Length: 351
Image 1 (spheres, helix red, strand yellow):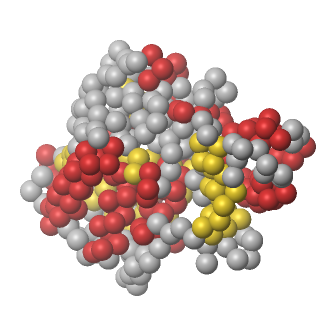
Image 2: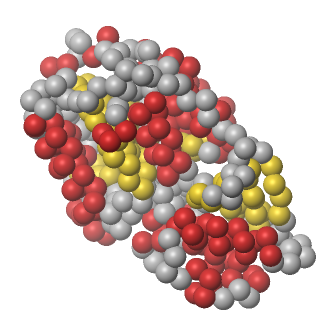
C-alpha cells in the first residue's frame, strides 16, 4: 500500500513523497530541490552535505529520512501520513492487444527553476511529471503500445526533445506507412512575441532564447514528414504565456494570442486550451485538468473509444470542470488536417 508523507509549510507550499512498504522511494509531485533548500534554511541542515551529487531517486529517500529525524517543534511545520490514491493513477485497465508499429513519445517538463537559476519555483508546472508518467502507463496498458515503444522523458532539455522527435520521425520512415504514433507533452508553451508562433519549452529554454525551444509548426512537420496510419498529438500546455502556476511571460504581465498552426497529413492534435486561456491544474487530482480527463476517459472506456467521442468528452468535461473548480475558462480544441477531416472521428484508440 502506498502512503504519503506531506510537509505543510505555510507560504512555502506542500511537499509530497510517495513510497511503498518496502521503503522504495519515488518522487511523487513536488519541487524537491526547493524543498531541500527550505529544510536546510529552517533547520540548519547542511544542504550540500546531504543532497550533493545524488540521484533524484536517492534524493527523495534522503529527504524523507531528514524529515523523519528532524525535531518538528517549529509551529510552521507538521508531519503527517495518509493513504491517498488518485483514481486515474490506479486500476489502469489492461489491453492484451499490442501493435509493434505503435509508438509513443511522452514528455513532462515540470521543474524549470532547477535548470534556470533566475526563475523561482512559481514558474514550475505542477504535476507535469506525474501527468507524463501516468500517461505513459496508459499507452502501454490501454492503448496497445509495446513497452519498448514507449519513450518517456521528464524535465527534458532542448537537445533531448529535438533528438527524440527526430528519432520518432525516423521510425515512422522505416515502418513505411504502418506506424501509429502518439506524442504527449505536459509543460510550458510560449508564443514568440514577434511572430506569435507557438513553442514547446524545454526546461533549459526561456522566453529570452525562445528559438531554442521546439517550434510547434516544426513538430507537426516532423511528425507528418513520412506516411503513417495516424499521428495523435496531446498537448497539456497553453501558448499565451500563461501556465498552471505562473507563465514564463507572466512576470511581465504579458499574454499573447498565439498564431494558430496548420497541420497536415494524418494528424490530429488535442490541445488543452484555446487562444489566450491558461491550461490549469486539477489540484485535488494532482494532474493537469486536461490530462486528468484524458486519463479518466481512457480508464472508463478501456481505450474502446473513437477520437470523435474523446474530443467531445474532453471539450465538455474540461470546460465545465475548469469553471467549477478553478473559476476560469479552459476550452480544449481539436485540430485536424484537411486531408483527414472526413475520417478521424471513427478511429478507435485501442485498435
